[in-house]
Amino acid sequence: MQDSDAPLTREQAVQELGEITRRFPRGVGQTPAGEKLLQGIRRNDAEWDQKQTKTQRKKFEFWNRKGAANPFDVADLILGLQLDNKKVAASVFDCAEVVTRAHHWRLPIEGDLLLGNYLVSALLKVGYYSMFYNRSEKAMYLHIRKRELLQFSENDPYTSAEPFPPWTSHRDVGGRELVKASKP
Image 1 (cartoon, rainbow, N blue to C red):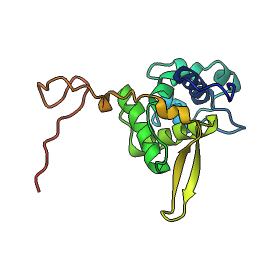
Image 2 (cartoon, rainbow, N blue to C red; image 1 turned 90 degrees about the horizontal axis):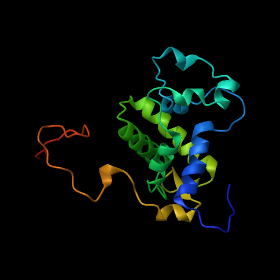
Image 3 (cartoon, rainbow, N blue to C red; image 1 turned 135 degrees about the vertical axis):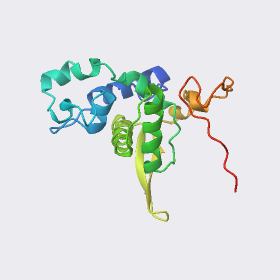
């Protein structure tokens, strides 16, 4: 971690969150399902139920497989989201959406939930956010603890201020599908 008086830069935040995302320190127990999804392991793979040994985890063997996400790229994507005073449930799906979209993954809703839970847990574990309960709405919210994060620009091309290139078919080069506006 860094000196508390020095302002947090995006590079430092990406490094810290990337390390937490990659090794997710915890006591004993199974590898979190969200971590397996980031490593490119899916529920129908034989490796899903295999226990990852301490040696494999120390060498980050599962992060080198084809289809695995780079945890530091994932951290950069997540830090581009503004989650302050947002419901935890919505934040879970926002985190999952930005990562799955960037990697062109199509996960079932349960996969999105597992992945988003893992990513929000990493944000809490590194200390960038905390959770609070809103009694009037009976819902959990995220509260930012590192105010510098609010200054980080969004880096999701779907929310970019730049216009999309013209469409030539019902799908663009990024795989986005053109949807007709519904009429009442």
